[in-house]
Each structure stands twice: as structure tokens, then as C-alpha cells.
Length: 140
Image (spheres, rainbow, N blue to C red):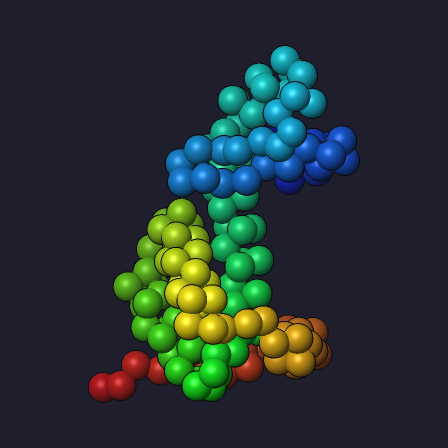
């Protein structure tokens, strides 16, 4: 059974799966059947990897629309620098952790989601699939 099919079937019944470190959270767990639990156990690693990647992408897209009182570019550069050590890794949980920590820090600094910026990012990505609104390069 494909992971996307499992997640979609659960979601259609109002059951959501969330990554919490190396664990998989289920809400509401009371809706799970014994068959659901068996399927989740059998495919836990793949489901966790998928949910972690999905959570990271959702959070990254949300962060693209943040501003802080001092401006947008320092936020983007800082995020790029924090993610640089993970450029050649396939550890989605570690990357998601960096993104979650970064969002908490942004909020503590007075950062807020900027709907106009988020709309602009979404428009560029829709019109030019695969394009980046900005590109940050390492200095030599």
C-alpha cells in the first residue's frame, strides 16, 4: 500500500498524522481501528518520512511570507545559512527541527506572516514552477 493512499484514506475520515521527532502523532487517535493501527505500524517509517517532509515544506512556505521589523532579506539569509549544513543530507526530521526553531525565533523577534509577500511568492512559484524568488549563494 502506498503511503499517500494510507494518509489520504485516514484524512478522509478526519484522522491527521503529525511528525513529532521520531514518533508519529495521530489525532484523534480514538478514531483508529485495529486495522488502521496495523497498517500504520507496518508503514510507520515511510509515513513518518512523508509527514516530516510535508511538514517541512508547509513550514518553509509559511516562512517565505514572514517579515521582521528590520526587513526581509536578513531573515532569508539567516535561514539559508542555518540550512546550509543540511545541503547534502536526507534527514528531514533535522531540517524540520531547524525550520521550527527558526519560526519560533522569528516570532520572538516580532516577526509576523506578511500576506502580500506570501501572495507574491505563491504567484512567482505558480507562474514559474521551480523558480526561486531569490537565490542565496555562498561567498568564496
